[in-house]
Structure formats: structure tokens, C-alpha cells
Length: 197
Image (spheres, one colour):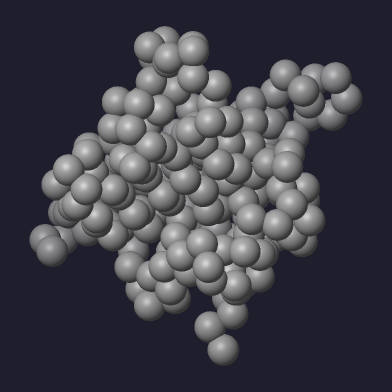
């Protein structure tokens, strides 16, 4: 990697981290009746204690620029782009009103993997449920591990694919695994703790 490219990547990662800590991001934590109308983005997902009330994948995508950037970057490095059915959830997108978001997007659940914060969730194409995106988002580094099932059925694991992250994704996608059953349980204690040792 050339020094200029490395510097550009570091600047982008620093910008993503700054966005996570900026006042606009913190505004998502307002209380009272304002809480119900506040954006349900990445910050709320990282603080979520009740799986049934965690923001959905599409809500985090629409309201959290660092997550959008990380998802896009991981897909781009694999020669892919963010599918239109994900981008449709942005303000001004052509979201399909006849398809409620809960039918295609899971909650973004907070995880702690070796004391680092992550968000984990998935979203499917409302017209073709087998076409999906699963993201494990590192909220501190602004990076995403992405599992993408394309329309042609090809399966890709992109982004940060270190051993523990691959294991978490594999277990999450395997409905019979203890991890997947635990994550699907409505009373799972959050954040979900994952240890490498």
C-alpha cells in the first residue's frame, strides 16, 4: 500500500470515529417523548439493553453515516455495491411502502468481542429474501465484516475477516448453533459477550 493511500485510509477511519462521538450522534439519546422520535441509529443500538427495542438494520443504515461508509467500503473491496433495496431506506429513497421494514431487517444487536464494541444484524431483499446482507460492525474502528448473498446465490465474506469475526458470522448464520439460538432469544442479555479464550 502506498503511503498516500494509507494516510487516506487513516483519515477516513478517524473521520468515522469522530462522527461516532459528535454531538449530533449523541442527540440520539434524548429522553422522554423526544426519545420516541429521535433517530434510531448506531449509538442507540450500541446502548440497547432490550433486543425487542433495538434499532433495525435499515434504521441504523439510514441514520448512521459511519456504518453506511463501512458497509459500502467492505462491499466495494469485494467488487460489490450496496444493493438498491438497502439504499432505498435512506431519506428520499424509493422505499417500498407495502413492505414493512420489520419483514426484511433484523435488530442490530450490540456485541462485545474481546472488549471491543460491535453491532450485528441482517437485512434481506423484500422481493427476494435469499438475497441478503449480514453486517458485523466494529463501532470503534468504523469497519464492517459483511456476508453478502448475491442474487445469483454466490456467497461472499468481505471486510475484516479475522478468525474471531469469521467465527461469529458463521455461528450467527447457522440457525442451529448455540450462538444463533442465544441471539434469537428475546431475553438475551445485551451486549452479548464473545471471548476468544
